[in-house]
Image (cartoon, rainbow, N blue to C red; front, top):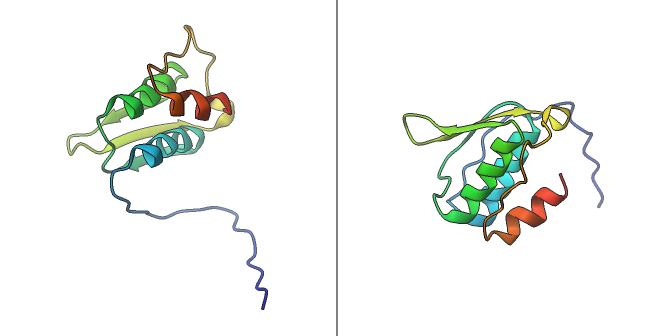
Length: 103
């Protein structure tokens, strides 16, 4: 049986996941590409995800931890990204480089 689900006009909700490096890169980038504030819980402090945060900040996105340690990203939409004033430094993170090359 095939069931078709109509396309939603917007998406709102909460997804709780354990800290994961791969998912963290994606959550930061998708939050930056979204429009408005995103709260990312359990964002790791390892070098690779932090490289992703540094890169999205270079693109004009505000991303910082609040008083509870939750990462707050203020997305500006795809058209709201600013040209970088310097080269994006991905550190040693191949994942950061691969994912941001598509943005």
